[in-house]
Length: 137
Image 1 (cartoon, rainbow, N blue to C red):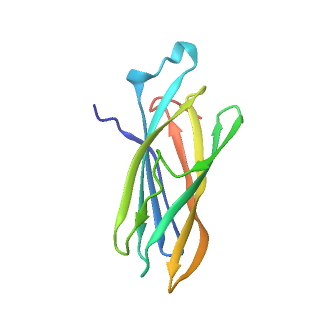
Image 2: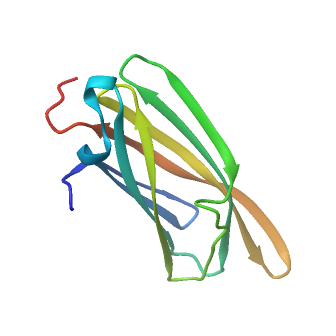
């Protein structure tokens, strides 16, 4: 079942574009128990001339009460993808919230291999909203 997009963002860092689209998932949410589930799809596009590899993720998740969670780890959904020049990698994941509205943002720890040297950088994930379509904030 497809749900309307509730939030989206795009950021470009060192020729790496990160686009996100988030959706509310009502059939997996229980509003009476303050449980709201959101899915999000991320596309990471390499517009540079050399391959990049995603090594780590860092998320900052805030709900409507101001409660903030930080999530850090290796890769995304169990993968550390290498993205060739002109190619992209897309994955989907979920975020539960205790409120009808929240935001996510963060960065990916990336590495670029150029002529035997390695260059690390953080690809930014611009803030996007997680919102029950009927919610008012």
